[in-house]
Structure formats: structure tokens, C-alpha cells
Length: 333
Ligand code: 13P
Ligand code: SF4
Image (tube, rainbow, N blue to C red; front, side):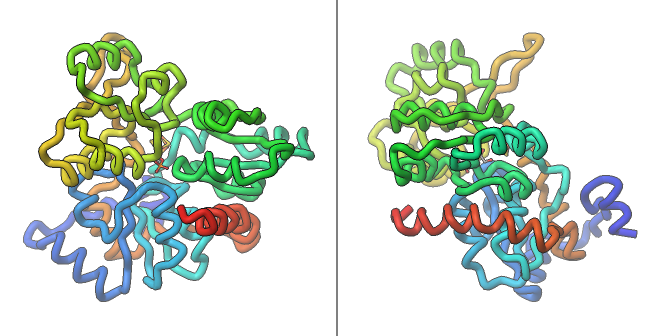
């Protein structure tokens, strides 16, 4: 019954008794079942405060690889939970809503990416972690925005490289390393649509503010940035830099940790481009925001929905992620 409903709508929509203290129950079930809750910086702030560990994609993969919990509940998106399952195939990995996908991962369909890879057999394939398990199986080394530049730089200069699926991150790596790569034409809908004119206007309004941007943003935004980095890097920079005003060009969820770490500083979310003259004040990833406290409660209670992968796919996707973790460890990342 519950499984059928998950097949139909992707999550458990059971009503929760209003007498229940949901947070206390979540904590009780977590202990009883030896579960760990991992959350990405882009989820809602109430969930960030519930999670045992909040981090960026690299930190979450590292945490998933080393946890001794029996159950990993992933408050993030599908490829992140899938990465945890690939790293820990014997653990139960739960994702509260299977609809939590990723527009960037969707921009690399397996058959087309396989054709691209097969057409360039002398190239090493580096893929961003924002990909499906099938793409990871076609990849030599996975990277995240925290280690992409260092991974490319760790390879011999003459090594030919295919980079996918994020063209913005690929172009950024080229500009930093001076290397040419064959770059797949994919992008994230959140980072792709920041409005350059609005950022310029905000900079005039707040002349002392520094612009912080994620490398998934397009080049016209990145040239305006005072700091470019993964979410963890942006967070750290906003805390240690003496500037006390920042315009933030990445998903708005990160502002919660920024304000927690630096409560006296001002953080202004860079606005997305207006579509039909309508725009909100921030940039939200609809997929990250599919995680809710209610879904988390039901997920822990029923231990569903769980990520399932065939042995073959798990094994063939594992090597590329392991290689990333090994290089990151060697480089102290
Ligand atoms: P990082 O977690 O590497 O900063 O990536 C951001 C992102 O878009 C995750 O989906
Ligand atoms: Fe994917 Fe973009 Fe959402 Fe990250 S922010 S999960 S890249 S759609």
C-alpha cells in the first residue's frame, strides 16, 4: 500500500497525528534505528537544524563513505542519495521524496553522453557529482565544485579531458587552469538564471558589498564575483572576510548557515532573471525544497523510499567516486 503510493507520487503522504511532537519522534526513531541524517546547505533551514551533518556535495559524500550508521537519510536530491548508496551499498539509503531530481543531472542523458564519450576514446572523463549513477559508470573521475580545479590540475598536462555535464563549471575550470577540455553543454536552472543587471544594480546600491558566486553560475556573473567557490567555500569566505555585506549568487538555502555563523553581517540574495516580469527575491532549487519535516518523519517511520541500485550499476559507478575521494584525501581536501 505505502509502496504503491510511493510508486504513484514518489513520497509517503500519510497524515501525522497532531498530538505527536514530530521533532522528538524523529530523534527517537533516529536513535532506535541507528540512522544518520545528512543534509545539503540548500534545504530549508528547519531541516538544516534537524540534520546531524550539513555540508556541500563533497563533504556529504565523504560523510556518507565513513558513517557507521545502518540507515542514511539524505535531505538533498536524488543524485546525492544515489552517491551515498554507491559508496555504502549495504546500508539503507532513504530519500524522503524521489521527485527531488536535479536539472543539471537531467541535462546529461545516458545514451547521448555515452556517444560523446565513445567518440573520444583518448579522453579521460571527469564528471561533476551532479549526475546519475549511469553517467558515473561512464566516468573516470567524479568531482564536486570543491575539488574540480584541483582534480584537473592533478592530471598530466597532456592528458585530454572530457568534462561534463556543467558547462559553466567546465568553463570556469578552463579559465583557472588554462587547460582546454571538451565540455558537455549542461547547466543548473538555478545558477544559470541570475540576473547580471540586477547584481550590478545591487552593487551600486551596496558599494561595499562583495559578490560571492558558485562556479555553476554563468561567466557573465562570475566576472562580477569577488569570490568564486563551492557552497562550503562561500560560507567560509563570508565568515572570515572582514567585509560585512555580501551579495550571494547561489541557492538561497546557504544564507541560513551564513547568518548563523556571522549574525552581524548582511547577506543579500542575488535575484534571478524575471520571467514575464515576475521574479522572487531569491533563487530556490525546487528539488532541494521538496524535503519537508513531515516527509522526513514518514521516511524514518516506514524506512522508505529507499534508493535501489543493481549490483552491476553500483560496482561500475563506484570506481569514479572512490577515485575522487582518494585524490581529495591525498590533496587534503
Ligand atoms: P556544492 O555542494 O558542491 O557547492 O554544489 C552545489 C549544488 O548545486 C548541489 O547540487
Ligand atoms: Fe541540481 Fe541546481 Fe538544484 Fe543543485 S541547485 S540540485 S545543481 S538543480
